[in-house]
Image (cartoon, one colour):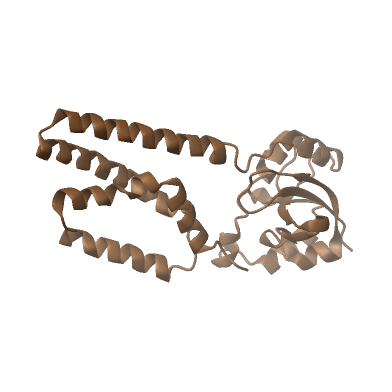
Length: 242
């Protein structure tokens, strides 16, 4: 099972936080050189990013707070050194423009990203295909919300089915599949990536082995999801076990 693509996450961070990343440039304008004490932390961070097989966007997001402080220090230093109030106005105006651009990008690209608009429909479908008290299972990104809407429990309260737990050895996916079969869980919810012709190219295998779906389940219904990061639909699988 492949994890998150490191390159894609770094590009995503640079694309959406480019204004913060420019903060070190201000240091060079004020100090003319990179401080020695900063070299080792940067080297350690770079080494960790190279060594660690997979990391989340949130890992990089930790840098945002420090880069924002760096920006504040830089502006204060520039104004102090130049002794010109006009320069402060110019810098402030520049920050307002940059902030407006970043807010616009957030609203246009991020605010509605991965929003599951047909959530109520999914919940109604699951409720109609299960009995009261019957447990369901599936992707951590949507199953808890559907369970709440459909008034159905989650199998063994396994709310967080993030693939990282399986990749890191916290849980064994094959063992989980056996337990799901033994529990005769009839409804499994996953996010999927569909390609031309409606074929499902990826998604279910992040929750359970693909063999379980091939041998025991059929696709009940699928709903498109726009602006998702990695998938483009939500699927409800109806399963029977011999």
